Structure formats: structure tokens, C-alpha cells
Image (cartoon, rainbow, N blue to C red):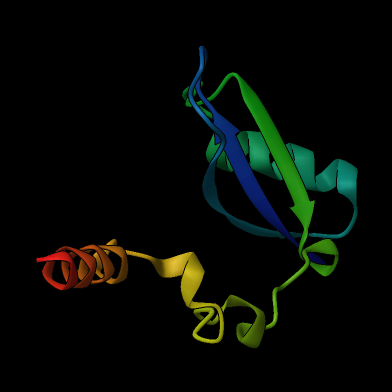
Length: 91
């Protein structure tokens, strides 16, 4: 049995949303199960099934805040302090 993640998209410009998970023996069976369990009432106009074995999981370290790159988290306080110092030194 393989585990599949099910994503549905409503008509229009909405994005795909995770609808659930199911176990199936093969991709064809997964489509049938997904249609019967997650789209019985036409909850979506499009459906994606992703075999969980093919999902790439990011390393938590790669998602950590870039503390060693402060220029990426500039809230303007450093620039404001530098301008204030320049104004005060001109007087």
C-alpha cells in the first residue's frame, strides 16, 4: 500500500488545498478512492494525488532564519539611526 496526499481545487482562481490522505495499492485505485472519499459532492473541479514517497521534505536547518545575513531582515532602524547620527554630527 502507498500513501497518497489529496489536493483539491475549486473552480476559478482558487489554489489547490490539501483535502486529506489515503492509502491505495496503485495510482488507479488511489484516484478512485480519492474521488469517492474527497470529491463525492463535487468539492473540487481539479484534483491532484501525490505519492508521499515523492514528496520532498526541506531540512529544518535550511528553513532557519538567516541570522548571519542581517541585510535580509532590515526593519529600517539601522538606516534611521545612521541618518540621525549624521544630522546630529552636522549641527
